[in-house]
Figure 1 (cartoon, helix red, strand yellow):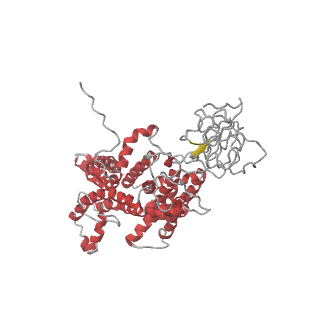
Figure 2: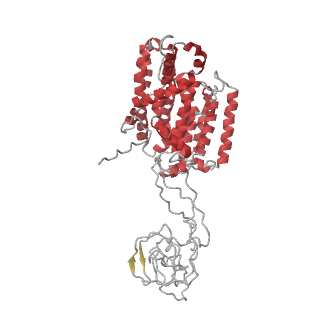
Figure 3: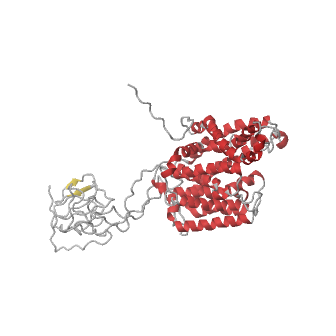
Length: 576
């Protein structure tokens, strides 16, 4: 079947607003059977006098409600897919069309073929008032959890609090967006839709976050060797690590909460057990008598090496002054385990925190800072390990929730200049507070909770606001890809063992004194101890990765790997 061609130079007419009333029916007028009717149509038929261009496939651009003015009303043709009609009128189908069945010009019912793609050369039409374009599916992994009714995903924020868009894996934001751009000869250009936030647009690992985690681990090692207080200002590693973990936790909570929590705990415990299996026997061998020091209740605290819900116990002094290790080695080795305890509590609390964040984002984000102002400044004192645990939770809680904000796309809602300006003010407050509350190590923010919380929060906001979301490392950073991959695949192993291995570098360096005549260089060697420790700790970390790092793979239910740096062995060449 062929269809008449409209006069040369005429183009598609602007679609009629379906919410405008249809033209009144004139009983004295004559009507031709050129108008076609949709099942939902209730308009007044008129002659097919539109100027649209018939579709090349003969379907989808027939005489629907947009084609011939008032041939069909807005509800009839507007929601149909359109079909060819004898008249020259052609219309543009709405994206929400449901073809159903249609009627030809003589009233005979006939089935409609499946909808076909719209004419790419037709001019784009703006969204009809009261309707939105159909959501475009984005191929990203599921990254949100259904924490309640569908309305929960809108977060129910008050007018003063901007609503956070749904995270990856949820329906795409259906804000009014222009249709696909028209051809160059179209009547007017149509702006492209705003791109989705990078964290929501690209699936897979975000290499930018991987770089931040690797840098944070390196900074922790350097700080524990040199003890430079200014490193806590240059790069607040613990706040960054909590923020990154919070972002990944929000991504994982697209699955059932209990399943996610159980998986995170399972990944954490085997490496922790291996660490305890090595450290605890050495503590006991070197004379630790916890029953005499702490009573029978120490058995309960000892379970923290099995499930670190509290701070694992350790002796402040272990061994003798003439021993291989310093007497403070146990405190140095087990002291950093506070991070494991805090991480575990954040994991357990994440479903509730994410639920609260999606309803009251700004209140949830800033609440830990307010709590730090209460218990981290001495205003309210909570003694013992309970006080330390609550302080850690408050100091780094906002960083953890920042990870939620990064994942949920909150930063895309706030102008960058506003984010940076407010963050700079918060960081300035942190430094001001630190200046009046310097600890035993001066400007070491680890000793000043309020300053640590404010500085880490502002620092992490800026890092995540400018997150470029790399899928591969760019430029010269690509040369560090294997090391970044290795550090991320063995982050738990590196953190658990690094301080103990730093202590082990001392007796190794001490062997240099057995060299005859080395005493002449005593001053130089003593000054070089920190640098030598830094150089030696990396081979020791490599040995730990090979020896016990594979437990992270077992815990994650992966095949064990000795050196998971992302490189693959090339297949052996076939010999003839």
